[in-house]
Length: 212
Ligand SMILES: C[S@@+](CC[C@H](N)C(=O)[O-])C[C@H]1O[C@@H](n2cnc3c(N)ncnc32)[C@H](O)[C@@H]1O
Image (cartoon, rainbow, N blue to C red; front, side, top):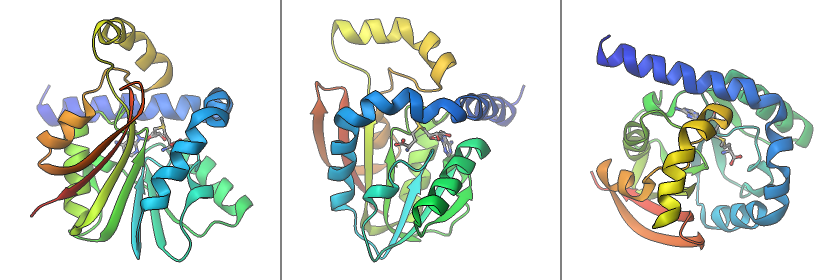
């Protein structure tokens, strides 16, 4: 199997996992959403500046309520079923967003298209996170910012537990619980401006930019 066939296969598997859980995704996440997620989303979006913003891995559209006013937002997801949930939510809530089915590993936008790019809980599941982060760097203007709200591999003993549980969790839910996302941002050639620890070293707000 060639490298690109292998990547396509991994992407198809990851997409199928999200298609499978799309119908119950909001239900599964509801307890966390009512807890800290809503607070973290509000904090993330309070910083995001337009005029042009891209959200990748929009999921069912849980960030819609926090979108800033007076910016033009494009949002993408590679799972048609998650996309459909987002489309219906946008319609129901009257949210103005340009929604598209697209893979963050191959974004169909020219270089420097956006002032800010945003992802929340996405790079835990992108099959090749470094490629996806490189793409964010490419489409974000050099003066712009890349905002990532992500859970990462815990440090110490819990990291070993995450490594053991990960194969099961990723099969059930689609998300890896042992990703080194801060390190991946650096490997993708992005410059880290700030990393804020939001929860026990596991949930982080990463702000980065691309220097080209
Ligand atoms: C854990 S969900 C988070 C959804 C949403 N961002 C949120 O905060 O609720 C991850 C989302 O990322 C999407 N995703 C994963 N890999 C992707 C890729 N390569 N390209 C586009 N979307 C992707 C999944 O389909 C899913 O909707």
